[in-house]
Amino acid sequence: MTNLRGTTPLALALLLMSLLPGCALRAREHLERGNVALDQRDLIAALAEYQQAVALDPNNADAHQKLGETYREMGDLDKAADSLETAVRLDPFDFKPMFELGQVYQLLDRVAQAIKAYALACELDPRNFDVRSRLANCYQQSGDLDRAIETYKAALRLEPRNAFAWSNLGAVYNEKGMYYEAINAYKQSLECGTPHQPVVLVNLATAHINLERWQAARQTLLTAIRLEPNLSVAHARLAYCWWREDKLDEAAASYRRALELDPKNAAAHAGLGVVRLSQYLAQPDRADYLDEAVECWHNSLEINPDQPKVRGLLDRYRIKQNRPPADADIR
Image (cartoon, rainbow, N blue to C red; front, side, top):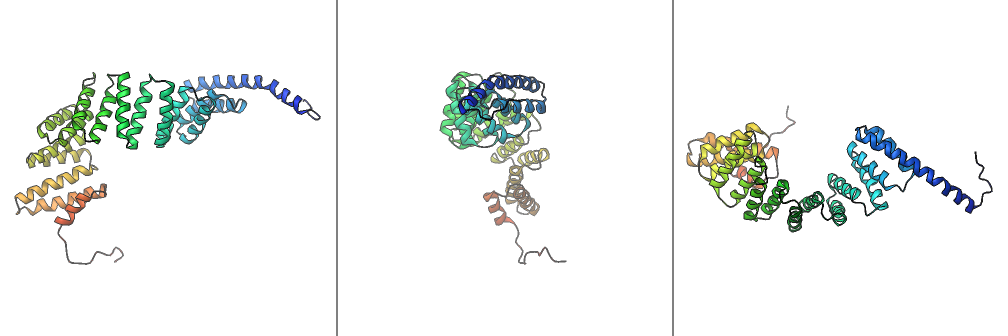
């Protein structure tokens, strides 16, 4: 064993420098073994190899990037972010760790940081569709709808036939109240070689509903239901169209079908209550309709209490008894 006593600082520095190439070489060996393990989905072995690699060569950006990738695959997103942040700090011009860091931030719901990482990744690879699409999605999440539209359009200039991006662009337009633009975007999505998109059809129908085009919405929803008969939201939106067209029996049947498929569909409970109220107002002798309406609203609020309009209906139409509230502690 080498005795370092009496060694001058300069000599010690030279000695350490002579050891560095060996450490870097061994780190590279661990990195390569980690890559093999990761390819084989042996995450525990991959993690151990990458940890050895960064211990031997702390400035190896590739090792930190692979360590972050492994942590992400294992579901440890905080450690994944730490490792990828180190990789980006060591090599800020490498697209891959920057992109992966944005993905991890997005999974952690750290949207502002994800936007920053994705924006930098876009600068590193301006022709990459995936990063622009994810950046647009983050803008959408953050409520910056104008930038979301601009960025989705930039992504679509790179991949004009991407149905997913057209659909997301339609959702942003719909959120902004730009319903005709939303309809166009949804139709573009359906024309991109993947017409069997029942959820996109529901979204298209929703844009028609927002324009009070009940027949167009209804026909679109019927198409969605033919493609996916068990899509609760499609039946619920169809029920709303029937109600607006004063087809109350059809509306009630469609809401009931939506609830058979998804008993937790708060909007369907509330909608069925409104239909039953409409039937009661047309036939005041049918008190059972009002009773069912009130129960529907109770059910809806149990699932989603944040519905002021439903609370207002309940307060207005439920029968109020002049008695004190029940005491849960009474035996």
